[in-house]
Length: 273
Image (cartoon, rainbow, N blue to C red; front, top):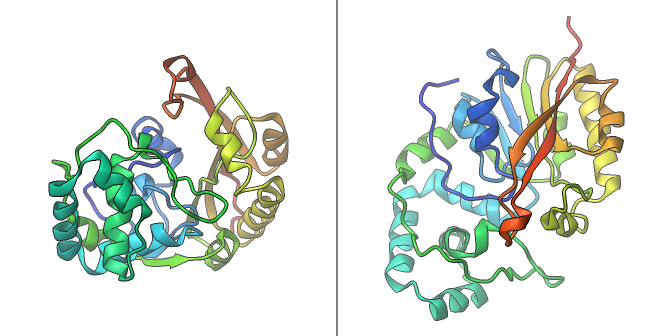
């Protein structure tokens, strides 16, 4: 790992900044390469700053953004500044409806929409079209933005759009995998979970369990977070130490829905040599 935590440049439903800040003891102090198959905002990645590994996701727009941030941070910032200068309600919906052809413009569109849509939510309709309404925030450029430093951090890892199982399968003995899938069971009236049920099914949860089990048998260090739900607890309790972690819920559009909730954290007992 390298020193110096970086702030994530994205706001992402289910982001793990709170986990990094409150439960750093859950992460191994020593590991070889780092793998994160559901990268999202990358809060854990930017906190640990690994020297090698693979970050991945099945969302092609998200992964395109990471690749452009890695290769073209200055050009991306220039595009984002143009979006910032033009930002209005009508402009937001114009960009939301657009389909840029270049990877750079697609990346700039993704980060612009992320920063100005409702609560940083990424949601698409059945046609795969981003359909989140404009949010209440107007800031497109953040004081914490340091795209050059983020680019440097990303240079140490590979970035790939792929299924989570393909990513986890690459991890070897002594590597560390952080697993944070979409939560697919209803708990604490979290409406975002209902949406995730259509993109990450219970069968996907079982596939994930099997992939984690294979990695465990190879001697991979694994930390998994998931919904605090009895079937998931029963699934993973034989495999490691399961903890319930309280956290505030901020996804709901209603203040009444932003009550305290909890998540599972599972430290997988990997096989020693």
